[in-house]
Image (cartoon, rainbow, N blue to C red):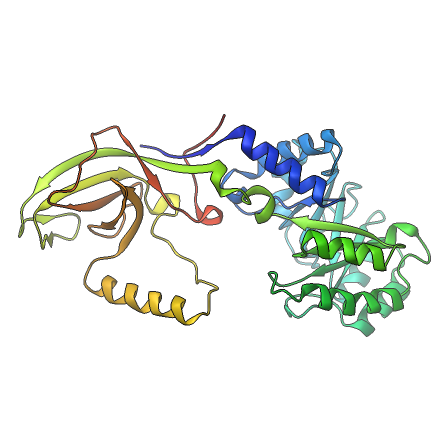
Length: 357
């Protein structure tokens, strides 16, 4: 059984180089399931980018628990995106690690980290319209004034996914960064670590603030930005002709039509059939959701598998490592061992293998 991510290596590597060259100071984000590739593989690829020159001397992980996944495969600095907390697992033990840069978004946490062993490296996070973590404008000024016992490495601005006006918000927030006096004591602190800005917006911001260094943190656009370089396949494991009214599956369902039950690799253990809430809010997106809900109620949930050029329906909810699909009578039935294409959400999928040409 295998669910495989196939990567057109030349095309993928060309895309990585293009993004790095377009975004000076690139900080690749390597977190979660490694965008389907695995964090270790992406850490090695970040080291490869650093060797080429355009970026990659620093990478960002999501949590402290992910540091070990990358530290032995990449020898540069590691920024932890999750804010440091006194009780956060792994945060305290890494406080004196000279490679680790901590993100701080509360004055109390800054005071606690200042008392930690060594001289921790710290990025101060400014609260944005995301309203997730961070300091207010006043809090940022106080943090800069009270940052004793730590080494300031700049400020973090985590913007929402690009809505077209992220540059305007970044410009507004930069007035607070300037007012806080970052960089007056140490030029390293005149660094802005920013997420979700287009290349032209970054260039505009850098032109407006030449005394600051901007470090764009990029994950999805970097690793998954050229979907044409990526293909996911599953194997056909079995095929059974069935008649209308026959029972099948774990739940003893009854087939509504004559056709073929196709058993393919890939199930809930891989993330197949598991969905996160969609971020789309358009009328069309809501209509699609309602239509799919009606089909689900009838036991006709569409699967991510494509067979003979068409998306196919699950015959029943996916199993842990395999799924059962229904092909109507007259549909071309692939042979056992054939590959079929699968459309997945890479950040929630675990592949049995990643094959890079």
